[in-house]
Amino acid sequence: MSDPLLHGELVDASKRYTSTLAPGHIAVEPRRQLAIVSCMDSRIDLFGLLGLEIGDAHMIRNAGGVVTDDVIRSLSISQRLLNTEAILLIHHTDCGLQKVTDDSFKDLLEESSGVRPPWAVEAFRDPYSDVRQSIGRIRNSPFIAMKEAVWGYVYDVDTHQLVPVD
Amino acid sequence: MSDPLLHGELVDASKRYTSTLAPGHIAVEPRRQLAIVSCMDSRIDLFGLLGLEIGDAHMIRNAGGVVTDDVIRSLSISQRLLNTEAILLIHHTDCGLQKVTDDSFKDLLEESSGVRPPWAVEAFRDPYSDVRQSIGRIRNSPFIAMKEAVWGYVYDVDTHQLVPVD
Image (cartoon, each protein chain N blue to C red):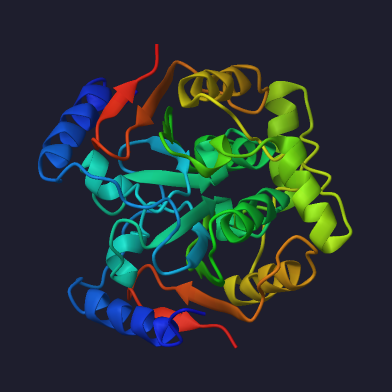
């Protein structure tokens, strides 16, 4: 660990944060009826970027922001149990998944662990094409009921612009 | 859609946000060498809660904050490609996944779509037990190399407290 004090530092920060919030119940159903699917990338602050408040939207994030079966699981729970209707996909430039292939990363894991992962790595070259691929997976899923409002964007991590995907 | 203007409103917000940031490259590797796994819940703002800056940590989020195969995929990419070493798990009170069972939610999807999902719903009763379950899945995965620093918490959405899981 580069920072052995990290754990305590995060807990201290949470105490300062919670002291600024008034206790009280906010509904579990997102106020804006919105679910966002985005990459885990450390440079994407969805609250700041989209001007969201606590309670506004579900935030689903994984390596790449790729629509996997686990994202379909999360979106189906978001829509069927918690009344969201719109889906916003945000991939980004300079993604770690653009720097490997499925084969090369599986080789790496197999060499170090002895086990080849049974799942797809979801490597990709072009974030715009990958957003279109993810939208296609949503459109093809029987478990996503609301597909009228599905919007795709690529976030440029250097210019901080959100670019729409046609 | 409850709010037909939502899409344009979010894009406008992103333009205001990006105008406040200086363009410039921040490294893809998280500065704090930290990956956070949390629920998609709309009431959890990880930047605010943990006092994080842009570039600090990966944020992996799904329904429940449960460690699924897709989370293992994301964590393996986070550690092997992007040098994170610590993992922080945050589940929370009042989760939608506490209000269903795997069977009842699969029945619901099957009734409306005709297709029974081939994946686990990952419903749970107690968030503390579920954090322990997720830590166990990390400890048992051959694809996660760094397991020394794995910390579990439950976020209370009403009191805003972060409670450690033993």
